[in-house]
Length: 93
Image 1 (cartoon, rainbow, N blue to C red):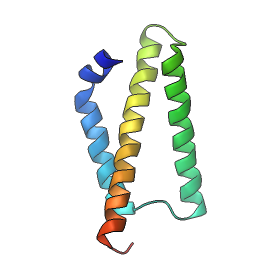
Image 2: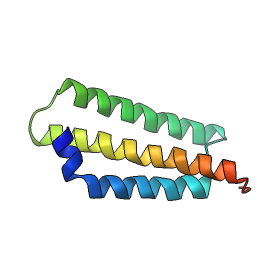
Image 3: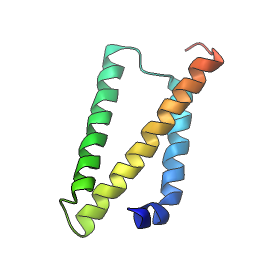
Image 4: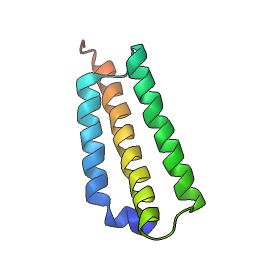
């Protein structure tokens, strides 16, 4: 996993930056549909992380699963940080 992290750091930085921008523009989810979408993304992250941790697929599919888990995690972390930044700054939606 460390080798995947080291080889994908530009993509991870881009995913984190994109998440920060999206989170700052939209804020934290408040409505029912937004909460359902956030729950779906978190469920996907949990599934990908579980598959990567259990090493269920060897080779290229395993690399794709680990990469997807890392990139989705970085994007969602950026969204949360950007949303918190928007709520702390007091900017209205």
